Image 1: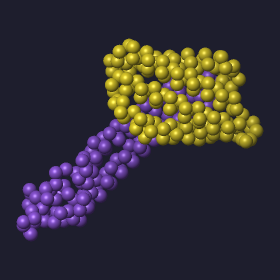
Image 2 (image 1 turned 45 degrees about the horizontal axis):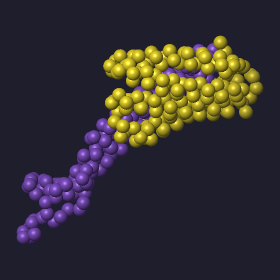
Image 3 (image 1 turned 90 degrees about the vertical axis):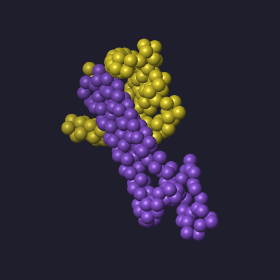
Image 4 (image 1 turned 30 degrees about the vertical axis):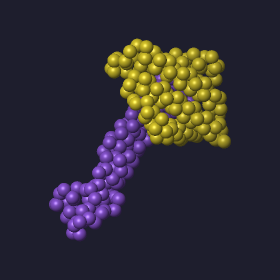
Length: 146
Length: 129
């Protein structure tokens, strides 16, 4: 299935179903390993799903400009940055709720680690996507990067 | 920090130290052997504590940063490929999130470890409460 020309509904359906499967697997494994109550697991699952839903819309928005490598890489980097921030917020909130992380430390860890880390991750995304697309264009000879 | 004042009736008692040396001064009151510690050694100990903190924090942030780089790479590989990536994008982003979680835990553990190790030393050195 090529993802470049699919409609939003199909994209959302496929993305969210595969994301939900891995989300359920992850939350189930962590919950079993750490002995977390089912109620808390459901909240964690839903919080992570919110991050995924936002990311799916942003990635779809980014994919609409796949013929413009620079813009596509930039949009995708922004999408991944927002995803990391939301994902880590959900994880940290869940950890604090389950008593694994003191609530007093949430903000300092978020500012010290999550924000700079997400920026590093999105820069990495930008570079990887640019290299991928430029090499693909060079191989196919399908125009030049703008 | 309870700093014992020098004995004003005894002119041979040591002079009050500068603020950074007060713990060693306090120790010297009860331990005559500590009186022989030269000021240069005290500065060396202080510099070592600072260097340990800088290297420790730097190392943890570097490790965390490399993991975040890897997370970005996973996300890009799963979602930005020109091939059949519609099915792989969701799990790739979840995988990237898991790696980012590992990066954050690694960084947080490092910060907490070095905070526990170096802050007490800083407090003793600087005679702070």
